[in-house]
Length: 399
Ligand code: APR
Ligand code: PHB
Image (cartoon, rainbow, N blue to C red; front, side, top):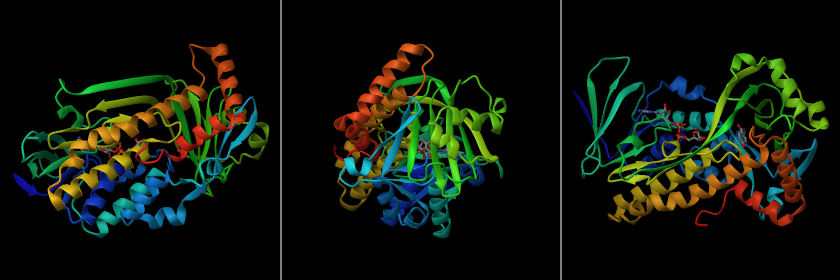
């Protein structure tokens, strides 16, 4: 049996695990990351791509800010479409100068992976049968097997374990059932997403569209690569949606001017994702910490998922750095409560924006009219517009 020793064992090499590994390394704290998938698989996942300034700042702090500086597209407004008309919400003006940046999660992950490999930091991919031991003790460990080499079990002995292994990971299951509380809402529809090498129809603003046919979203990854979504039933298969059907449906949900300007082309990725709100509390038990999707999921409306993962990691890295520097365990003790305050506000915001923008099968015509009334109120009322804007750019850290 191979035994590794480190200070922090990180389970999961998504953005949360990689960013944590990078911030800890910069503070001189050793860590090993284990990941169930291959690096290629991790990099093939396409997810949301809007960064709050706090996330951009954290990428700079981690030493991987060059990618977002060079390739990120800064936005000062978002557009809301309803009743076939587009209404700009000037988020920068409404928030005293704040912006959001379009930069894909895939690119964030790639930048962090490249940094980790340049620095020759230990990452073990293709692991399986991950188990955790002694999380109530001062000497926890993680054991696993590497699937494609041998069936020998390996162990990482460490001081702390960070469970950054996403919604389907194992870390959360190690918090005793008598302690863990779960809160969940599953929405009765999904998002069909398409990535295509076409110029974004609205390069200056992300477009969120409410239509009687269902929700649609226009986003981007660069000035030549676009990301679009339409709401669809979860019973749909990707094979039900030819590129032609997708583009036709997207255009029908936008205002005529945008539909007219839309440049279409072959999809390079197409997938259907469910929408879910989920929180597991607490985020720490003994020497195990949860961060990112391992303990909370938001529906993608408003793009809070990656940003929440980033702030969890900000708080967790700071807590561990304080602990190693001064033996001060306040940050460790406060970690869960501090994160959850922010998480529930983002849960509320993404639930609200989802409820406002989608067609719900159970409310049909009535629901549509109420949404349109609220949207009209929102775009006319400066205080409601400001509320949307300040949540969209990200509430201040200790709000
Ligand atoms: N052992 C090791 N790794 C695991 C295990 C396991 N048992 N189970 C899952 N993983 C890996 C997954 O393969 C994945 O690469 O953990 C990683 C978790 O990464 P993400 O799902 O990307 O979650 P996170 O890093 O928290 O990032 C949050 O992802 O889903 C989006 O909206 C979300 O943008 C947000 C971001
Ligand atoms: C994306 O670019 O993929 C995106 C943008 C905004 C969202 C969700 C997803 O609210």
